[in-house]
Image (cartoon, rainbow, N blue to C red):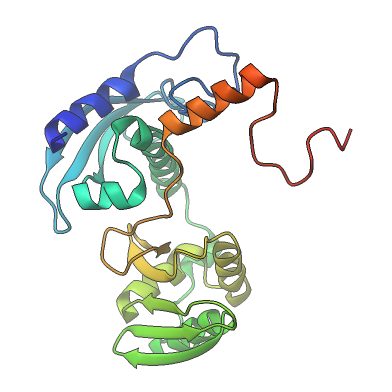
Length: 260
């Protein structure tokens, strides 16, 4: 499937009305989460394919249904990766597999857009630390993962016990933006990255800068690629088999039925 056909099918999926028989708060067959306003407060109006530095991109146009007292533009657009190699690495070979992620990213982008129009907090008005202090903060963040070595300019290798090494690729300008985004308090920055790495799959051993933030990836090239989920067709098949046999299907922290 070429990029244009892929984008056309993605648009069809994202603009199709949900099944009215699906109860509120539940996922339908498309696995798109609509509990946070997608399809109601946030609606896709167009998707175009445009070139980018890291391959083709989706240019997604949307409209917002927001309260009148919010002084926020009620329409806009955002860019997301579309490069074919990146799609395959990320598990988005089929448009239906990418659609739930696009919906989540779109809603996340809207939340950021709304916050950008809110009055600045007192912390936002504080001066940023010096570049030397910022570099020390980066080394402290990475040092909580293992032994840090600056292998080359803007390239850090973190050697971890009984695990593959972590590689961080961040320039001083990029790291300053990360600090500004997550707050200037050292404790808050450390907490953010502790949570990020604690929830990161082993395969995502690169830390790169993308979309204004540091994120993990399975490769150092951009766009970052995440560990793929099983394709929707496989999930649907497993669900169907589980229902037919009367078994549960899912991932649990304990055996189903062992707790009240």
